[in-house]
Image 1 (cartoon, helix red, strand yellow):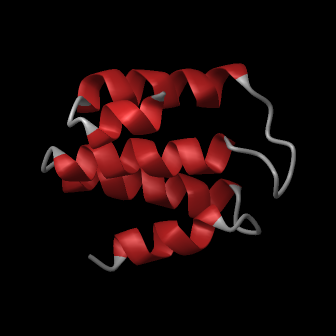
Image 2: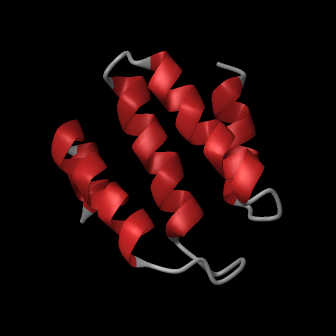
Length: 80
Protein backbone atom coordinates (compact mmCIF):
# COMPACT_ATOMS: atom_id res chain seq x y z
CA UNK A 1 0.00 0.00 0.00
CA UNK A 2 2.86 2.39 0.78
CA UNK A 3 4.37 1.81 -2.64
CA UNK A 4 1.06 2.54 -4.35
CA UNK A 5 0.77 5.82 -2.43
CA UNK A 6 4.36 6.58 -3.50
CA UNK A 7 3.52 5.95 -7.16
CA UNK A 8 0.49 8.24 -6.84
CA UNK A 9 2.69 11.01 -5.45
CA UNK A 10 1.06 10.86 -2.02
CA UNK A 11 4.36 11.01 -0.20
CA UNK A 12 3.09 12.00 3.26
CA UNK A 13 0.67 9.07 3.31
CA UNK A 14 3.35 6.79 1.94
CA UNK A 15 5.86 7.85 4.61
CA UNK A 16 3.33 7.09 7.35
CA UNK A 17 2.84 3.58 6.00
CA UNK A 18 6.58 2.94 5.76
CA UNK A 19 7.07 4.35 9.26
CA UNK A 20 4.43 1.95 10.57
CA UNK A 21 6.16 -0.93 8.78
CA UNK A 22 9.42 -0.06 10.50
CA UNK A 23 7.85 0.35 13.93
CA UNK A 24 5.43 -2.60 13.86
CA UNK A 25 7.54 -5.35 12.32
CA UNK A 26 10.68 -7.07 13.54
CA UNK A 27 13.70 -7.35 11.28
CA UNK A 28 14.04 -11.02 10.34
CA UNK A 29 17.00 -11.17 7.98
CA UNK A 30 17.23 -10.98 4.20
CA UNK A 31 13.52 -11.71 3.71
CA UNK A 32 12.50 -8.80 5.94
CA UNK A 33 10.65 -5.92 4.31
CA UNK A 34 11.71 -3.45 7.03
CA UNK A 35 14.87 -2.19 5.25
CA UNK A 36 12.95 -1.79 1.97
CA UNK A 37 10.31 0.21 3.83
CA UNK A 38 12.99 2.52 5.22
CA UNK A 39 14.47 2.86 1.73
CA UNK A 40 11.11 3.85 0.27
CA UNK A 41 10.63 6.27 3.16
CA UNK A 42 13.88 7.87 2.04
CA UNK A 43 12.70 7.92 -1.58
CA UNK A 44 9.60 9.82 -0.50
CA UNK A 45 11.79 12.44 1.14
CA UNK A 46 13.91 12.58 -1.99
CA UNK A 47 10.86 13.12 -4.19
CA UNK A 48 9.79 15.96 -1.89
CA UNK A 49 13.19 17.59 -2.31
CA UNK A 50 14.32 16.87 1.25
CA UNK A 51 17.68 15.33 0.43
CA UNK A 52 19.03 15.52 3.99
CA UNK A 53 16.14 13.47 5.38
CA UNK A 54 16.50 11.02 2.47
CA UNK A 55 20.21 10.60 3.18
CA UNK A 56 19.41 10.00 6.85
CA UNK A 57 17.11 7.11 5.93
CA UNK A 58 19.67 5.66 3.50
CA UNK A 59 22.36 5.81 6.19
CA UNK A 60 19.99 4.14 8.64
CA UNK A 61 19.77 1.15 6.30
CA UNK A 62 23.51 1.01 5.64
CA UNK A 63 24.35 1.26 9.35
CA UNK A 64 21.65 -1.04 10.74
CA UNK A 65 21.11 -3.55 7.93
CA UNK A 66 24.40 -3.65 5.98
CA UNK A 67 23.92 -7.27 4.91
CA UNK A 68 20.43 -6.68 3.50
CA UNK A 69 20.05 -6.15 -0.25
CA UNK A 70 18.29 -2.81 0.44
CA UNK A 71 21.67 -1.47 1.59
CA UNK A 72 22.83 -1.53 -2.05
CA UNK A 73 19.88 0.66 -3.05
CA UNK A 74 20.63 2.96 -0.12
CA UNK A 75 24.24 3.32 -1.26
CA UNK A 76 23.01 4.30 -4.72
CA UNK A 77 20.67 6.84 -3.12
CA UNK A 78 23.59 8.44 -1.32
CA UNK A 79 25.47 8.89 -4.60
CA UNK A 80 22.72 11.07 -6.09
